[in-house]
Image 1 (tube, rainbow, N blue to C red):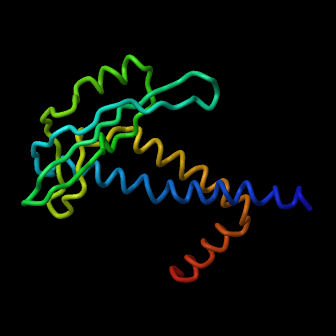
Image 2 (tube, one colour; image 1 turned 90 degrees about the horizontal axis):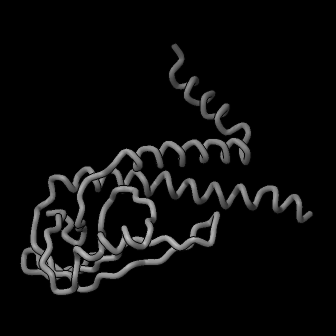
Image 3 (cartoon, helix red, strand yellow; image 1 turned 180 degrees about the horizontal axis):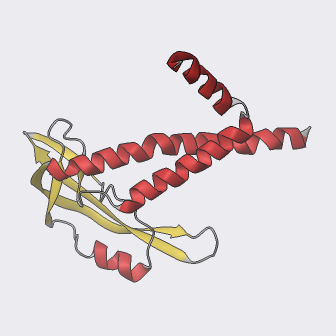
Length: 167
């Protein structure tokens, strides 16, 4: 019984994670691409630190810079901490510290703000190729897990599409 549960629980959890990735990654890609056209304004750094992570495959520590900033847009005050929409890997401490050192508390920095949704802001605008690579990999794993959980899913989907298209 436990084997049967484990046979479907793990793939179902993976299915959920990859489905979430298929939703989140395109949103990051769209927002990152749109951020090129967002309004450039000045913000004040409130906090600057390093976030520590442990590699899954080793005990080595990796880091990402964390920058919290405040800004005013059309008379309203907002707080943001989005550094970039680009997919970034964690880094060695010296590299992350170098990036973080550019953002000291009380420094004024340039950020980009979405004019229609001013709570959306970013320090480093744009996207990179890793956004698309991540999406393709996530979609590939999603297809594999979906096929494992629902072997007839794709066949039934094609049959339904063919019934509508009848050439």
